[in-house]
Amino acid sequence: MENNSVSNNNFIKVAIISGIVILFALFISYRFYTRSNQKTAGGGTVEQQTGGAGSVLSEAEKARQGPFPTITEEEIKPQEAVKIKVPEPGDQTAENVAAPTNVQPAAPGIAAKDRTFTIQGENGVFTPSTIIVKVGDTVRLTINAVDKEYDFVLPDYGFATQPIAAGASTFLGFQALNSGKFIFYCKLCGGVNSTAKGELIVAP
Image 1 (cartoon, rainbow, N blue to C red):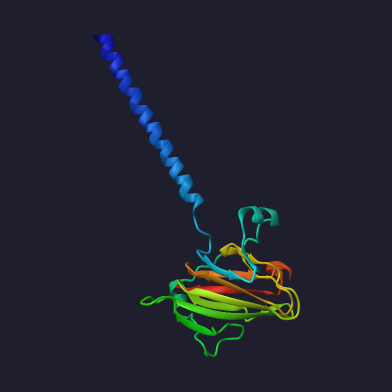
Image 2 (tube, rainbow, N blue to C red):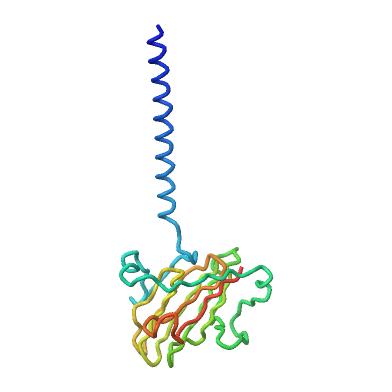
């Protein structure tokens, strides 16, 4: 009887330990899966790219091109948000701040907007060089290469265009989901240290 009792106790102990090990393995698998499906640092969703010039950077492409320059994402403090005015069509904006050419509701009954902008690449600079939107807005951006070949990289959103030939244009569409300041630049012009760069500001 004692041997049977000991055997039963050992079996229960083994069953409990096995159950704990299985639960731990399931937890680790779940954590790995959720991390592998996280969104980009900028929190944006690429919505549309036309003309064959836009491309989301795959992990393989990122590895091949090397790491992007380290950029500190500067979150907008609540007291600063009051000072940030999101331009509307026809507004007189500060120098190098883009006024949208068109603004319309992203969908009926929601506050988010579709905002359309145009940027020129000319004389080695992007003009205007600052785009201001609100969290949740969809940004529709046309980039015109005026005098030479340009490209457009927004690393926090994980995408870049192919080279845009002089006289040509390309279009990018994406949703801004997190507030902050995100740098963009022309890699062909020298990258983040070139004069062809600017900021996407997403106000809360």
